Amino acid sequence: MASEIRSLEDLKRRLLEIKELGWIPSRRSRDTGIGKTFEDLLGIPENNLQLPDVGGIEVKSSREYTQSMITLITFEPPKEWRNVNWTLDDLVATFGETGFENGGPVFHITVYATHYTSNAQQFKLEVREINGTEMVCAVTRREFVGINQNLPRDVVVAYLVDEIVQRISKKLKGCLLIIEAESRTVDDREEFKLKSAKLYTGFSEKRFIELVQEGQIALDIRFGRYKDGKPHNHGTGWRIKKKDVLKLYAREIDLLNDDIPNDINCDNPIIIEDKDTREKDRKITDFISILLLLL
Image (cartoon, rainbow, N blue to C red; front, side, top):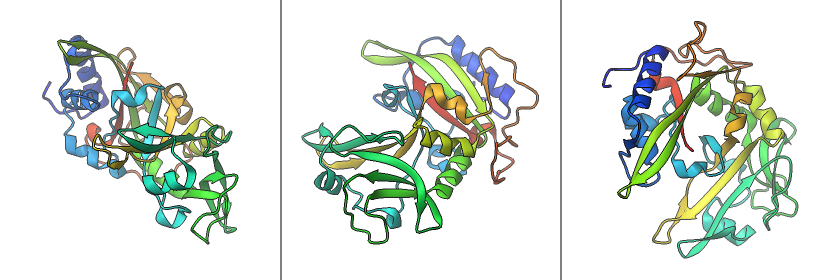
């Protein structure tokens, strides 16, 4: 299985070969084992993972999927749109901790547009206009006085809608592949077995914003601690439930069971209501974003 993947048919054949292998020992221990294992089997160079803004490979570890949530993209709110110092210590000092980990307070909160969070933080997402011209997706709080005089008093942090859409479409505009795998432990070593591989195409930028407003896409703020107690920002991510992924795309193809339609082309994807910023002439493993999901 060392041949290069240059087409969807190549990808389908490789996935069927992987499925025939049955249970596969993890290539790495702990959280990143599932990602590393399937990267190796698909022949994806690990350094591609450092290029998300040019359509690189997106891999998620099994332990991130305990609630069946998929992280579409991770990036921090711009400094000019922060109304609080964006550090674990400052967030805890301002809003209180959400729990404790490795001997200290942490701040991990999932924020939706349909309701305020039920904890002491009382956060909510809002898509709205700021300064009369700029449309943003903001984390708001009922009672809050921030440090940035250029932002409304109830805004904790905000993202420009245009920037979110640009980053999301750049990352996911081609084809999104979601791989599901079963897991078991044998002699203290984790093993995986390929369960399904779904390909999504026809990403809708407009639907992304609508799904935020409808509460089906959330913003996850994740500040934790290393084992030695030092603060660690796991990344602020836009997340969606696996069952809702098709709402972002026009089509779903089961690569393990379905024939690949002739009009599916990840080099030149059909993008619903998108600005055409496509990049061409890439191997398929350079432009397909892969999310690995453990059942």
